[in-house]
Length: 342
Image (tube, rainbow, N blue to C red; front, side, top):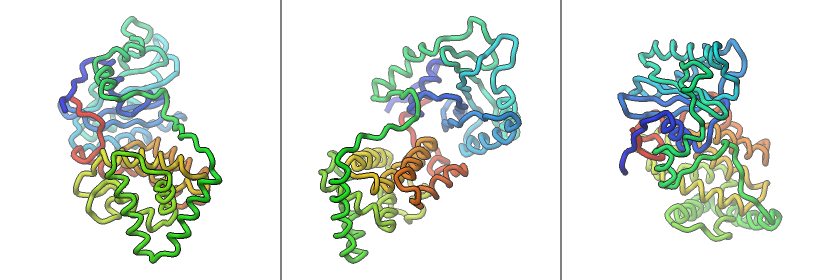
């Protein structure tokens, strides 16, 4: 696929929106650069209390230095805070702290943008001057047009809206019936049957039948089978624990992972709240693998909403909250990326 080139600030903001899948709010977004090639993209909530600037900067730097090839950083501060002439830009102390921490790692700040509700401007520019451009100009940027042509779009926020789910009682009964069948089988046979069912779905180009969805959801209710099915998603033949923590030597098959997410969302519409937690947790895992920590957190919270005692969702959410980055995202050759860019 032909690589694209970011030439203007509008291109950069369009790239950020399409890469994240949503327009950030009250966020710091950083893009690592190696010469003129783009590396990792990081979005993190802005600090909400004064006095946190240095610890916040160290956390951001920890994530950014995961890209060992990075030599510089482009950043954008998205904030609704007023930007008044003669005053420091919002979160100036945070950017100053980040500049210093990154300099200690040999990484420079190449450029920065301040993105308000309606306009954006160079972060080091004087507020209230004519250099501010309307945010709407990103809609006509060359990068935005190319992304849209390739089927990408930007959501207004990162809030997840799950598909509508009807006839929950009937679906719950169907899943329970399959669970009874699984319980009656030898563990090895049940595991093999679940893996074959899931493999057929992942290899197909069509969504499965209602019955196969009920069977998949039923298999996911059993922790040993669930973990194996999640590990089967990336299509990597390595130890299961290495796959689950995204620490394999070979790259995952990202198109297969994206298809798995669509299948799981489809399966979610064929189950009830009492059986939904494993499905939502698996989707959360996929988003963590892809470096979408905020979305992973939301899916795991949705899983806990349906079952507050669901252990894998709680442990996974704690893992993500601790700042652990999926191993695949530590390497440009294995990290998830929607499109090639320079």
